[in-house]
Each structure stands twice: as C-alpha cells, then as structure tokens.
Image 1 (tube, rainbow, N blue to C red):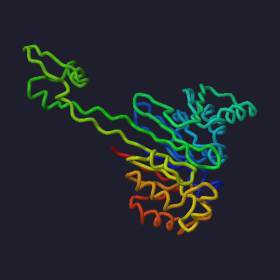
Image 2: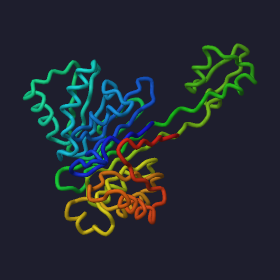
Image 3: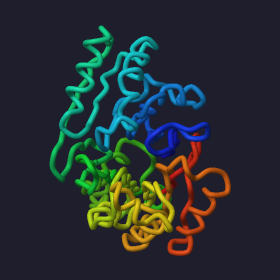
Image 4: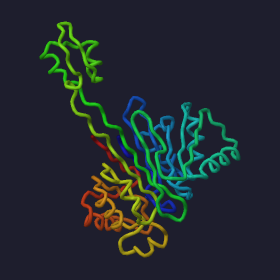
Amino acid sequence: MELIFLGTGAGVPSKGRNVSSFALQMFNKNNSTWLFDCGEATQHRILYTNIKPRKIDKIFISHLHGDHIFGIPGLLGSRSFQDGTTPLSIYGPKGIKEFVSVSLQTSETKLKYDLIIEEFDNDGKIFEDDNYTVYVKKLLHGVSSFGFRVEEKDIPGELLVNELKQIGIKPGPLYSKIKNGETITLDNGEVIDGKNFVGPNKKGRVITYIGDTKVCEQIVELARDCDVLIHECTFSAADEKQASEYYHCTSTQAATSAKLSNAKVLLLTHISSRYQGEMCNQLVNEAREIFEESFIASDFFSFTINR
C-alpha cells in the first residue's frame, strides 16, 4: 500500500498546498486506487503523479465542505474522457449524491461508466470485500463530518513447502488443498492436517483518516492500534482556543490522540495557510514532543505502508 498526498492545505489553496485529498494505492491484481476527499484541482495534482484516473474505483468523502468536494465533478468527467469504463463508487455523508448529480446534470457531463453513490449518516461499516473493510464514525465539526478506519483482512500464512517435501509430498494439486487447511489422506494411507503445514496469518494493515474535527473520543476509537493515523492539524498548539472555535485540532491534540490510540505513525495534514516554511517545522516538532513518530505531509508526499 502507498499513500500519496494530493492536497494538504486547509480551507483554501495556497502556493505550496492544495486543498484536501490523498490517494491510497493498492498493489493488488487490479492496482486499484482509492481517494479520500477530493478538493478543488485534485485532478491537476494527479497529473504530477503516477496515479491513473481510470484506476480510481472508490472515493470516500469525510464531509461536504467545499475544500473537500469541489474537485469531484471535474475528476469524474476527466476519468470518462480518459477511457475510464469501469464502475466508480463514491461514499459520503447525506447530501453528496445531490451535489454530484446536480453538478453532472447541470454541466451535461455524460459518463462512460457506472457511478454508484452510497450515503451514510451513522457510525458503522460502509464497505467490505474479500480484502478490506471500511468503518466510519461521526466526529465533531461544524457540519456532519466522519472519520474512516480501513482494515485490511489478515493474509493467509504461507504454505510450508520444505516441510511437505520432507515427508515426501511433491508440488502438485494437493498443495492447494493443504493450503486451504483441508485434511488429506495420502496414497500410503497416512492422514495429514493441512493446517499443520501452513504458517501463521499475516496481520492486515490498518489506516485511519481523521478529517475536520475538534478533539473527541471517536478519534481514538477509530485509530486504535492503527499502522498509520492521518490526522488534521489545522492549528499550532498556541492557537488551541481558535482551533476549538473553528472545530479543528492542533498539532499537540493530534499527537495526543495518536499516543492514546497506540498508533504506529502519525501523518499531519490539513495545514492552515498561516503556517509557511519553518512554521510548518514548528507544528511537527510540537507533535513529536508527545508522539515521536510524527511527520507532516506536504503535497506529493508519499508514504509506503509495509506489512
């Protein structure tokens, strides 16, 4: 898995940071890509990456403020123009379907692929397939805003080929049955339990995204034992009062949530344009005083999540 940040600014774009969006690239058989939020000009940022719009098959929206959704109509249209034909699903709070539908209808944008829009308004599971499950919880913001927890399902352990060869079982059709944990009767009458010849499962990775919110207990619940916590960091510690008034978080509040949740890594994003240059270093240094594995994301910053 790889995270690629396409916009790490808050509210309005600046010369150094576009508004909110990041991609989660899955290195699976489909090489699919998921987007989280899609602020204005997200598709322009994509041009400077290896992301292919036709490979984007899911977009998850945290809330309906413009800096998180204004890039959706343009991206959908361009995906169609660029030979995107496979279905695309959008998951977001109530109201996202009307926003997208009206935008496409008014601009007479015709898509060459099926667009599925699924709205949610409560905590719970919003997506599951053979490999991943996505959960949401409502956060504390000026409008209905949700955080996401992406859980990769555990990877089955590897077949212990050397041990099978030692008891005389050569590679062949039996290997797949043993891999599935089946009980096998060999030609000599010996019975073996396939489970004894498969290594331990590899724990799936967990990614948590906390968009716009002020401090709340739901953050820690979503981020519990996650591999990566992507957390809004709109203000510095010194501006905690203003952060609360605008329903946002500070660097130290994000770091405290990372520590309480036992996250492995904290990536700070959604940075106010008031913090430029060395002032951004101040934000991450404040966070590291509480949670050492803190990093500040910039546009085009990438982060690989290994098992």
